[in-house]
Structure formats: structure tokens, C-alpha cells
Amino acid sequence: MPQHLKRLIGVFAVFIILFLILHYLLTPSSFGELGHYRAKAIPENAFKELHYAGSEQCSKCHEDIRKDKAIGFHAKLKCEVCHGPGLKHALYAGQFKAGQLPDSLLLYKPAERKDCAICHQFNAARLKIQFDTINTSMIHQINAIEHNPFDKITKVEFKCIECHNPHQP
Image (cartoon, rainbow, N blue to C red):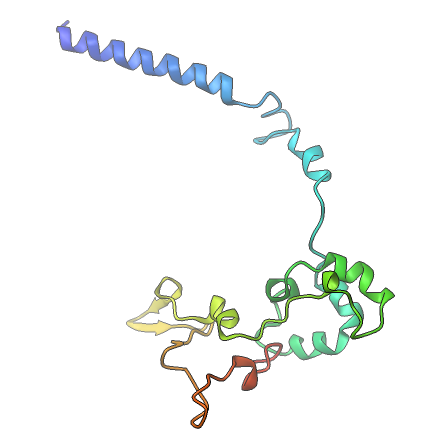
């Protein structure tokens, strides 16, 4: 056998041995006990603090908004996608009168153009090309530079919510 093949086999053997040693050292002890993941991840995740309440909790107090949103394009979009985690708000807001919530219980109210642009800004990666036509129907995309209405006198940009209802755009 040629000398260069012996060296190559030796190098491969070293890499395989190193791989097996690293695999043994880096694989958690509970990996594979209950499937292809760490079994200890279940109790670890059970002790993590919850942050999200779910749209069902929002509907208990905000039924009018749920009805409005249910017939719009955002019907399947969960409230917390735009307003942020709402578990503390859902649990404790009932103890306060409307308008008197402490800052820690207030949810984010997206009102700026950048908030809508997170999903609706024109993005070539989201385009679906079918039969030489571009379909943007999955998420209506706008070019914020072209769709940039502003007050002709003050030259101030309008916010999206001045023309569009975010719950039923």
C-alpha cells in the first residue's frame, strides 16, 4: 500500500476517534431516554416563567375587538403578535378600572409605520412567483417609499392606523 494512503487512513482514524470522544462528552446523559431529545428538558421547561396568555384570554374582556378582527385579514393572527406578551395583563388587569392600569400591565399599541412594516414591508423573499406573475396575496406587501402618504401642509407622514383599522385592515 502506498505511503500517502497509509497517512490518509491514519488521519481519518484520528478524526473518527476524536469525533466519537467529542460525541460522548457533548451528548447530555438524558438524551434519547424519551425520544430524540433530552428527557430532562421537560422539567426544566416546566419551571420557566410564562409570558403569553393566548387570544382566548384577550377575548374575555375585548370581545368587541375580537369580533371586529374575526372578519378581517388579521383573523388568524394572535393578539400577542402585535401587542406583545399579555399574561400579566390578562391576570391582573381586571383588578383596575379602565384607564388606571399601571405601566407594568399596559400592552404595546403599535401605531407607527415601522410596526406595520415588520410584516407588510415589501420583501422579495416573501414573493410567490406563479406563471410569470408575482403573487403577494399571502401577506399584502407595500413599498413604504412609494406608499408614503403625508400631510401636504405640514409634510408629516401619516401613520398607517390613520387610514387602516389594524384589527380589520
